[in-house]
Image (tube, rainbow, N blue to C red; front, top):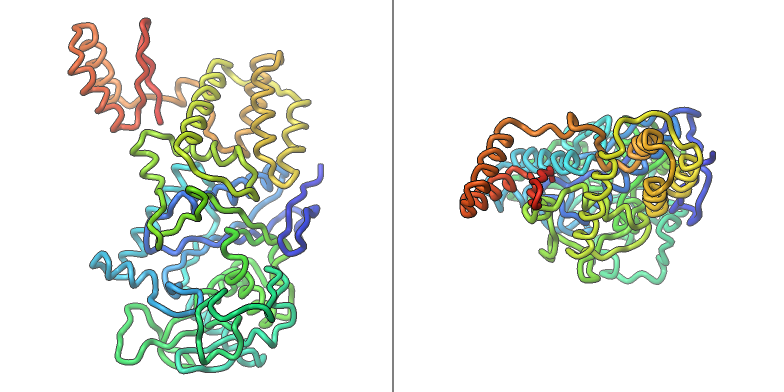
Length: 457
């Protein structure tokens, strides 16, 4: 059954077949580690995870690389302003390395909470300086660079087809509409490959180069690291739609100008998660973190479920009402899955429908609808269970099948016993206090006339 993916490069769905028949080279833009990821960022990583899981479900091997940007990403797309990581270091009174290490670890915790499969490689920009300098040197040799007072720039006018990916109207662009004005740039769309350290100012992260002491531009890292770890031409490059007009456009230009080969065969982009119809942004301080959802007692997988209810190429607005509905639906789904008992056999008709849905450009809303159709069907319970476990290989909702999978730690069991005793003694104040302790440990308490149900968030 053929797999079709929407290719931003051609603006249409295309049948996907990797260069190597059984193995996919897959690069995804990772985080700039100067602050917590917000849930708008995390929507991108969930979509990228679904894409990876669909590839695996189609019996393809996947070599997945995700970069960590710990140097070079400035506060302006015009290659101006402060380095975001060094700015974070000043904000918190730490070193740039401490900031990068801390937020890298926090990001990885988010991925684990959301049941996102980790990449095979996590290359860091700061650990690939040689590769980036070598790439700039090659571009210089090929005649694509020029020098200004603040760095080495790529001359975009020399690269034919620069505008294709983002369908840019370069003639119609005004300075400041896409990036801020830089008087020394030859063209509005030119970008920094290597930036010089400011005179009289010592940066925490700077290196010697053929052009002087400085640091790499933001865009060059992805080209250098993807080509080192995946080759000159890769099958898939995924990321958020916000990277389309500048970052990914620049990646194509510098990569293909250096090698003379196609850089990426399939560009796949996920749309924004909005808040009150506005894009989430750390600079606007209108963002929500995953920890905020957890503090409000929502399961991270309920957030994942909410996102799967929309297609990855559709903009959606975040609301607490929608997240609550997703939590209720996920709880019901888990309860139904548990009641089905052990898995045995499968439901071929439903599996065929599911594969058709996910292979149609990752149609997760349709895939979820098929899940509920299956649960409500008259198929044998063991076969339904077996099929649902296969579906969850793609959906990643952590559907469990036994009490063993939902084992409660001893300290939690002790609190539950104490609370039951308090309820029997009609000591409601103590019972409420113990409920609070359970909730701090991420266990939800549901009391009924007959018994008490404990669920992990």
